[in-house]
View 1 (cartoon, one colour):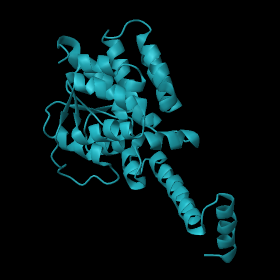
View 2 (cartoon, rainbow over the protein chains, first blue to last red):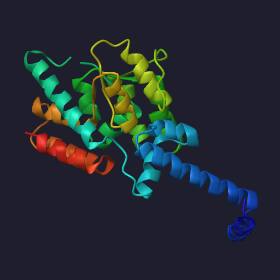
View 3 (cartoon, chains in turn yellow, red):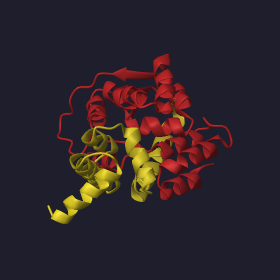
Length: 99
Length: 159
């Protein structure tokens, strides 16, 4: 690790009244969080798997994504497919009761 | 038509303000892992959704079941989604409700039927289960939590 980065961690730790190791762990976690949110946004993992990886709740994942302006959820193509599924179900239900 | 809900589907239907209605109209099932994710962990962190969803589940409107392990590998999924897949093999004619991009991709690859919460609102609207304006209101409440394209498409599909 570059020495200047370690010096920077020292400066940050003094500002936050903590120690260098804690600062480095915080930076590591923030980097991991950002990476994991990117994986969720790209549809490579689910939000709940992201929560398990970071040992937080799924609500925390939603909140972190919102704070970073990251939109999660189905893609336009998935919404379209879902609406088509809804239409198929409507046709099926034409003579059935909802059960 | 039984609905299997993952954590994402459960939370988003609740935030749309229609979870209780959905649970009255459909047989709704969650695996115990989803209960853990949404209610237990949510309450530990003081999220108000968690308590409200717990009340709906505990009223008996939503069944919580133990799920067998899914038969196929499910990469990138959390415990709740894996449990939903496991339950799908047991519950005949079920539809999975989720808005999670990764989960929906996998379901589509395996030919497993699914609905996003927005599409379910459209379905309920078209079936007349929601009063005039109720579907719009639900989608508006859901809007901050889904992508813009999904919101627009669903609004266009309403009666």
